[in-house]
Amino acid sequence: MSKIEASPANYFKEALFMAVKEKIRIRLKGYDHKLVDASAEKIVETAKRTGARVSGPVPLPTEKQIITILRAVHKYKDSREQFEMRTHKRLIDILRPSNKTVEALMSLELPAGVEIEIKA
Image (cartoon, rainbow, N blue to C red):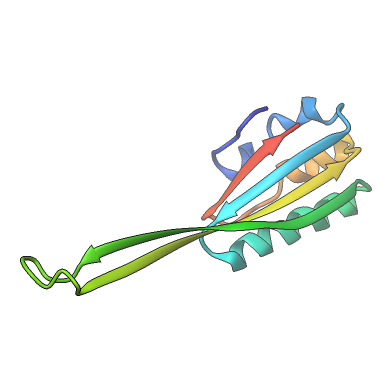
């Protein structure tokens, strides 16, 4: 199990030795669901173009973090404001990847704001 976070060029760096294995599992996380979906679509399209079988993208449950703050400083405790942060997640399995697939994924440009986690 390895976690890769850095520039887009390093996302699939460790995947070269993972290509020998049967499956590469990619998890995408982000606050903007449009960016996460666009990134997932790019990865799926690239993997299919190189001949690998792709399972996904599978939408995972969205994490919702709610923060409540008091609007007033001293009294009026009933006056509160709530903010929420949603983390959208997608799961992609690439089955039987070749070296060509891994090299294509390494050169893929993905938008900022999407965290990528790769597991073999």
